[in-house]
Amino acid sequence: MAIEQFIAGAIQSAREKRPEAEEYFKSAQKMAAEKSVPAEMRELGRVLQRIMIGDRNVDLSSLPREWAEIIQRMNASREL
Image (cartoon, rainbow, N blue to C red):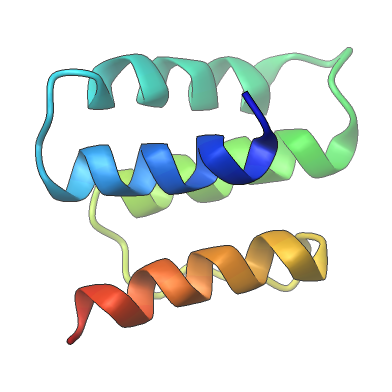
């Protein structure tokens, strides 16, 4: 699964309270905690956890621009 698909799937599943949201959350937790994972991936894990628990004011500045843009689009579509 491409990282873009993972981001979108995690946010959408949490938003819709689908059963797979728990697995996405666990994966995000592992990403955030695993020292062997690149720093940008650990940060993505932390950001996704915050988003999935309902935080709407997550700081995206430490993420690569492409990932931050995906998250911003997903958040914008939620507000429509």
